[in-house]
Amino acid sequence: MSVVITIKVDKRIAELIEKMISLGIAKTKNEAVNLLIEHGRNEVETWIEKEEKVEELVNKWLKDSFPYKGLDTSDLREERV
Image (cartoon, rainbow, N blue to C red):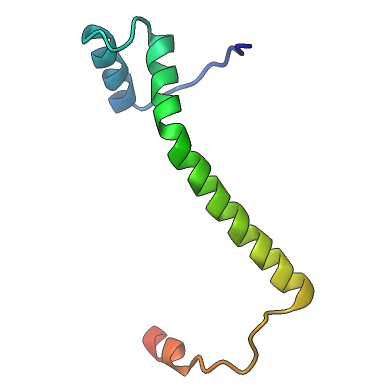
């Protein structure tokens, strides 16, 4: 099932889409955009998974407290000075 959305893209993306059409990689702008999305999808899904894991850990630590106590963080403080 297709869903129609309206988007604005960076000029470089628009030029890339036009090149894809002129080189015969895609027949239409719609096809070109869908190809770009599909080929970048795996990378974005991996990025989302990492962010979700970070969020899950942060929420767990906020709920159950940080699992490490008494860590020496003096070296971190020294770097900030």
